[in-house]
Length: 109
Image (cartoon, rainbow, N blue to C red):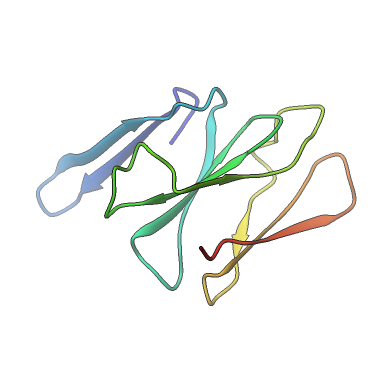
């Protein structure tokens, strides 16, 4: 992911792009993290002022997130603020650049 809001999946064996998706979110993509318990789930973090994170399932239409969540902030989320998965894959945590707190979300559905 990057500032062009595109996500590309690369097959290293075949040396070709296997997934290409332009995010509907307006902010650049700052992080992409695979769920540690389910390799089909991807957390994508966007530099926006709300709903900075979207959860995508590769078994479904990847361009439609299964969940969008985040927090309200006055500035776009910094690329230096990285979300983190709990090892069991059910929780996501993230701080902010403006508040001294950590947000925790339960993403089971």
